[in-house]
Image (cartoon, rainbow, N blue to C red):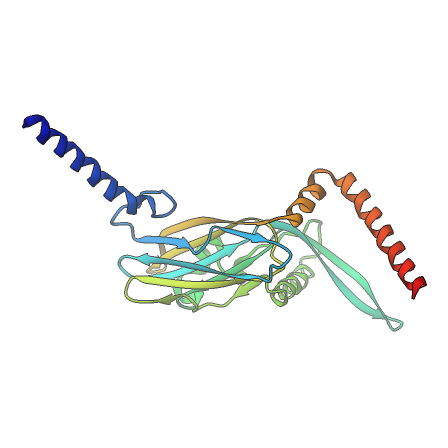
Length: 260
């Protein structure tokens, strides 16, 4: 009887451990979140695949906050070099008159908040966290007159806004109750591949009291991924194939036109 009771006690113990472990493992990708954590967040997906039919997608970021406060969410794409050119009309023809290259520009940048950023925190804290376009620092690759750089910087931001790669729309974080919140970001079809970071900040009295950063992976799939890998890993072979395919396409087009 004692043996039987011991077996039942052991079985009940492991069942209880299993039941408790399930919700903990499902939180924040296997990370055990304390019950008193002031901020818990997650993404609707952690992997976005791009193929020939990809037309963009929406990214949902949601979470829960304990004790109230303001939420600021920012999504940053991998950094890349960007060249901004200024065109002028000379003798009736538009030509490039000047250009400025910026070394590390987020390929995607979007920020959302429960209120205007200037009402949530101070410029110094926002600048340290790079929250908002005014707080982003784009350093030119070469020495340029300080009076010229802001013009090209503004032009670059406007270009990327028109392309759907930069979003600065605050007051988009929606609370579904006293604790739950959500916000959606639109990723256009021309997003770059790489590792993105979704950062969520909890502010109280102008100060950051909690922050969570979650990676988001964007990659190509199928034939697109094969061609992308070849262009990076076997650039010479990729160039030769591109030339051969171009010549073949031109020859086929010429042949068809002659037959017509």
